[in-house]
Image (cartoon, rainbow, N blue to C red; front, side, top):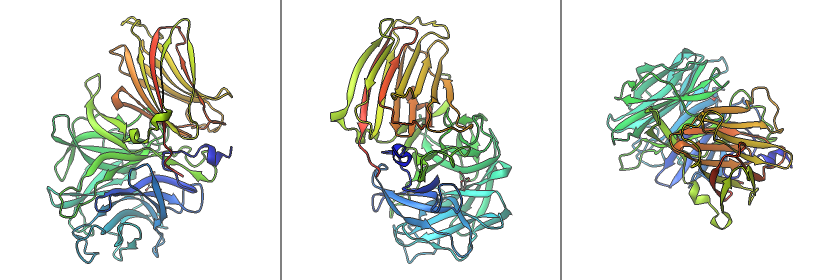
Length: 499
Ligand code: FRU
């Protein structure tokens, strides 16, 4: 199989050809019932460089229609780096003829040929398809070489736009306010947790707390220098009063225990004509990639994919820590029920390994795995209560999710694959899982070269790119110590949504 075909996801967005990185300008246009998604794109090569904003639209976040590049390099020669989009319904910017749901403004970083990074605007009068650069660019210029990735939202309670942007090399997130998108006033700065080298793509999003009050999550993507190598995303839960973000505590929380979800952006709802809401929704899309190897992956004529859109909410983990829980949005709608397989497997000393042939290998699968250890002593020692799930092919290649109940270790493993040989393509990732009861519940989306893993009700999450030499067509469940584990398996083929 050609690698460009073998690795092409069926339900995750990927560019038809060439290189993609960060999602940009994610926005729901209520008036046309359409999601717009822009993305960092090099139209000429399968590596980064020559950055533009590619463009796709969707009604459901699964079926994406490709459009021509939306933000092109203009007469300033500046590359188009990451940023966000808003619908300027009430024409606060004065770019438009009046109020309209078609008034789109993109706020992006201009990466100038002399190395300067500043913030510019482009506006669209056709609902987000074609854009014109603002003649007054830049709108914020600090004469800096590390100032990028503006995320802008309208805040109805303060009647103003707020920009969240990175002073990358200073490891600072800075907030600005504006009433017209053109003139910006500095508000405050935030810096905490892991610094790494560069802060990138900060996002501030309101969420409803468990008690119904309003909280904010500040996501900060960092590259390089994250604990697992290369890039990753940390977040803070806190309050925003229109000027300052105050975290509830100083702890850094990592979005995932793996290293392939970067530069996420929330999906903004946009302004609704005559309506009130313009907040970010509680869903984001991330880039399945790590700058350590994203430009070397073996996918042939195209490179990189996005995560599925994920919902996030505040919850508490088993240690009483406030964290976010994530779940893939609306995956149920893609299930092909007639092709689903369910089975109950009793693993034990007579049955340490159970193999199931996967029903359809040309599309993505959702695996729901519920395990029960009712005969394991509740004081099981480390090494007891071992469970492995493998997605394997007949060449002895597999990706594995594993669990050691006695120690509370959970892991993902992509070491036993031969499709990609790269020193930074870390093979094993481990974390802790909730072992207070004798059962577990995993949800895994597996799609050609992208795996998304959810455990502990979405508290424990790992996105992992993987590259096998031929498709993984078997599911293998193992109790290597012969311990009794009852496993309920549900395999749901998901209808292909991408070409
Ligand atoms: C993050 C990033 C951003 C920048 C863009 C350039 O992955 O480095 O900081 O705007 O990619 O493509």
